[in-house]
Image (cartoon, rainbow, N blue to C red; front, side):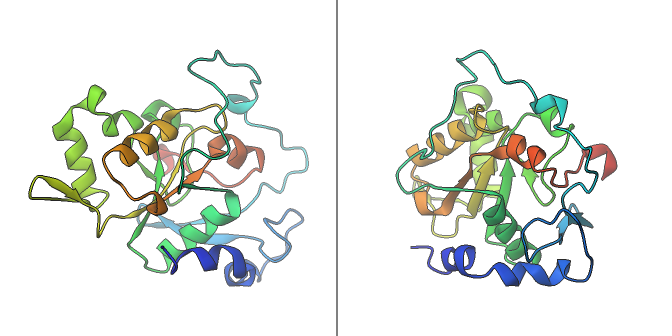
Length: 218
């Protein structure tokens, strides 16, 4: 299943390097990758790490203790068949999207009040409550499934044959927004092999000083 996507995640580090090979940085993403260009809402954004040796963690992600529940530590494996991935795999997916693969969408599941602080370039914001029937209602969820995730309704059932491959994330190890959406999607039959979970989310992305974009800068 999904055989056309998984091999590229593990066998092709040099494929990503082409866009970042021309410039030299002190702080690279990997030994062979300095930076990578992606499209975000119609404009090119360069993903790289902060080069300031005195750069520190974003204060929004500096807190070590949050009330649990709801901010509980998430498991390494969220659900059978759903692959947990890291930053380099997210970059591989973004490259595929940038190269014209419309079958993939990177989903920021956070609420807008978090997204305005910065998100991953190339990600699409679908707030977690928009995919929650109890919060938004069945009609609103159906609209998201059809218009943004390419799921079809056929003879009263969901048809996932052409459904998008989803790369979902939220605020990180303590955030339940994307896990809630993933579990709900699985309940209605969304194929597990079409869902990838970036567990580290924005906390790990920010801690690695990778580029973010804010709505006001778009």
